[in-house]
Amino acid sequence: MDSDEKIGAVGVKMIDGFGNFLPESKRGFPTPWHSFTKITGLGKLFPHSRIFGGYHLRYLNENETHKVDVLAGAFMLLRREAIERAGSLDNRFFMYGEDIDLSYRIRQAGFAVYYLPEPIIHYKGESTKKDIRYVKRFYEAMLIFFNKHYPDSNRLFKLFIRQAIVIAGLLSAVKRLFKITDLTVKTVYTENTFSTNDYSYDRIIQFMDKNREKNVLFRIYHPNTGITVDSKQATVSGES
Image 1: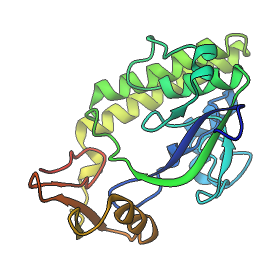
Image 2 (image 1 turned 90 degrees about the vertical axis):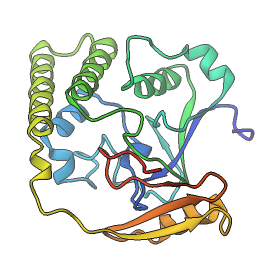
Image 3 (image 1 turned 90 degrees about the horizontal axis):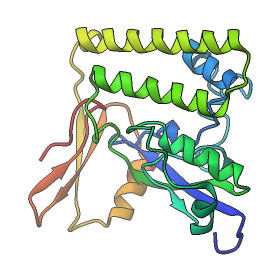
Image 4 (image 1 turned 180 degrees about the horizontal axis):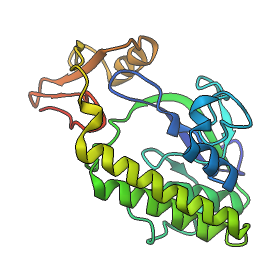
């Protein structure tokens, strides 16, 4: 950022407790088309397509630096001038969508937004429980952003997007209510534990990023506090 005053925000490569890349590390704006492909599932069917994969930008290599549209609020390095021009967080967003809105306004203010492939661990979902209130807040945030930044879009298409968001929200709520995803056989995990006395955080994160394997859970033990941190899934809090 010091070498280019036009860079207003920088984000990084986020990985979960298994070392898996989190696609929200770099995203495109939720334009009407990108919203449509996300809600209908076309983005998941064709993740590496530039036509259908514009929301999570899967076609951009996660291990390379890219100029993107949206960064995750879990980590954003911001230029003071960019915030002064774009404005601070919009209080209408609660918990979700505020990072998308801020990234959008930074771009509108004339600054670039960049993704860097420097890994950090993000225990996704630890700041909130994935219940019906979560579903409601998440999809309400999408509606707020859509109405705020695309007020002149085609009314019929806007109606479709609104109805699709509502339906997607209801389906997600039903799944969580009846725990449909928990009816399968319980997954068995292989656990690898790192002590911060033996390894630096940088070495641990680099190892997790390069050695991601299915059902291998990485745990970080802090001898000074006796706490071990991990996250088996988005709906389970780290253990202590």
